[in-house]
Image 1 (cartoon, rainbow, N blue to C red):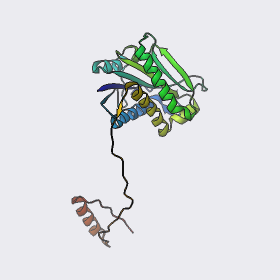
Image 2: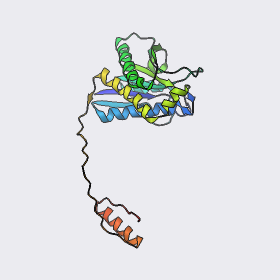
Image 3: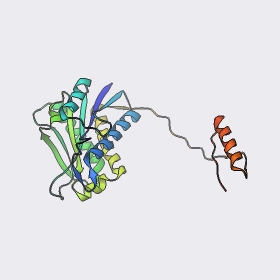
Image 4: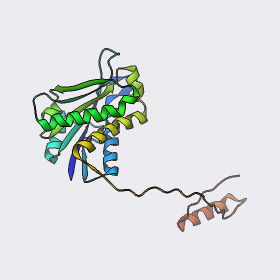
Length: 231
């Protein structure tokens, strides 16, 4: 069993970066929730831990503390970038600049490549792999990475970030990297089958709506699917 701590940047009174009608705290929670759901639904032997799953404020040291107390194996903090220059755009990743741990370096390499490969078809620029002194990657005891997923201050990036489909691609890029780095195994799910034909049965038709409502409730009480259609 591998334990992954996912950190949605900012929250509550801390909106994070803002721009083009978007709030960083909302975007990061959306992406992290998608990552967690994909890991839960598609993989086995994976436990996910979120530093926040609602719009609440959590301090930086407490975020690291949550991961440390849970003895997580991996920590990923998701953020959206911002700059005064509206032309600044693209994706970048950050590991702690005070470590030369080869496992952390390898994790950044794998995650950065996987995320960028997922989003590059949308015209996203690669700003490169960076080393920084961010508290959440400095104070965590495990392999840790912070991702900056496009610029909320860039009209072109913000336009993409406003679309749920793009946020899902960003989340999938994170999942792809985690799968590759950790060797996660996908769960075996039975293929979905759709019947070629559906046969509907009409029970009755009534001029009095009370009679229709009475039969409707009776069918529901017996476990049948029912609906009232007014013609």
